[in-house]
Image (cartoon, rainbow, N blue to C red; front, side, top):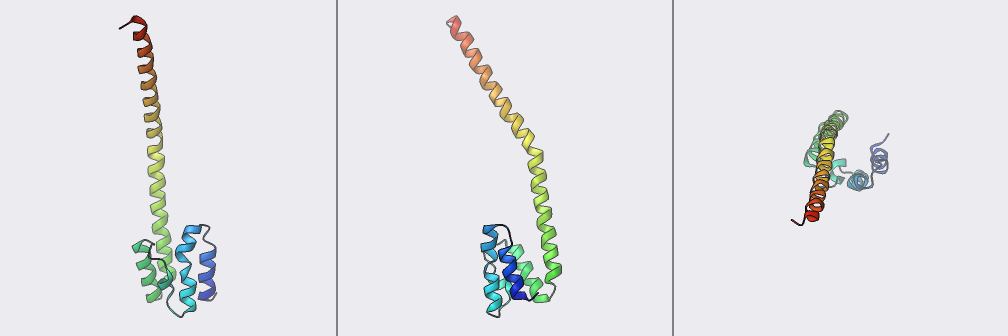
Length: 116
């Protein structure tokens, strides 16, 4: 697959409009005869941009892109692990707050009946 076709396919098939906009300039950059990384958006994380540039200039873009994929996969796994770990704690905390509110309301009703 020629690099021009690969750049166009990559930007069209991301499945995410925001990411597609971040990499849309790569095909224009390749058509202009410049390296693909010149067309990447500067809003991308610095590590992604610099590793892509290094891989492209060293001729090891395939290995570099695999390393980037693994790195972001590990980061996403960590984020999901943290979410799964904290979600029950947050839920139980919200239930506890709701129960405290109910208890306070019931005590208020009881003591208002005594005229205190």
